[in-house]
Length: 352
Image 1 (tube, rainbow, N blue to C red):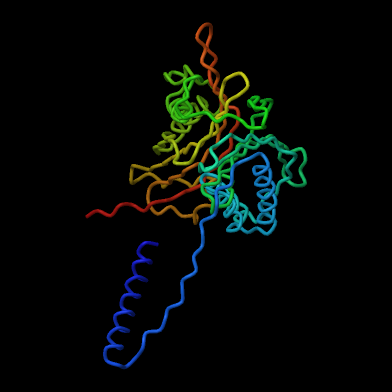
Image 2: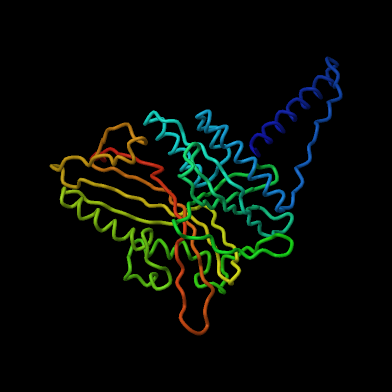
């Protein structure tokens, strides 16, 4: 934009210079230039429960229009960050399989709207809602959805959605008399794990298992120590096929959010990446096969000797209040959702 402005400015100066020369020679006269219209930037709108309600309703309507039409580009206009990656992958998988994209039914949501400064951006809120696949009522799950508005000129977008584990309830979020929730600061030490550290703790447990120091503050489960066990098993199976499997869990650049619960704990929603590389290091070893869950992201060929995948994973965790005396409860993951969102089969490096 700055470069464009400079180009216009330079053009205006050149036109003025030519006009002045023409006047001096008596060949032309300068004409008054029309005033350029100016527009004021949109005024910030305070986030209220009513604003959040409208944003949620708009998203549900717009999402269904895009999914009913099978329009991936339209669907992506209402999402951002990790949710965009998962939405794109879902549309491509449906197209690959020749199936329609899932559409959803939503029940009445419970909205958790933090009290933010009127002019503060980004604005955000969480929704807890029962969601089922259209036409499959028994498919219903409780879903946590995080919405974000990055500036007054932007639209509200779904940045993260994660599904509550079976037989697990959403922690009671503290709501004041005006209907607002309390946002947790990233360095809040009243909870066991500072909100900004939950992501790193989870990634460490996934990488190191139950023997990790991080496992002392986060419970074992299918998506914590279970990730470690799964990777260990998969590496063993790959080795039997003369392949090497590398698995790495990392933080994402996407936003995370925390809300105070009624008992002084925290509800934290966040994302992780799970990156894998399946490599045939021995040139005499057959090339690795493309995983079935990644076929829709590739063209069916392996050029080199490895297959790389990146999964986008969305979670919610309960972060208990820090206990000064007595037994300290651990944090535990309560919601999960994710899929392979990227895949590649890089060609072999050419020798110089």
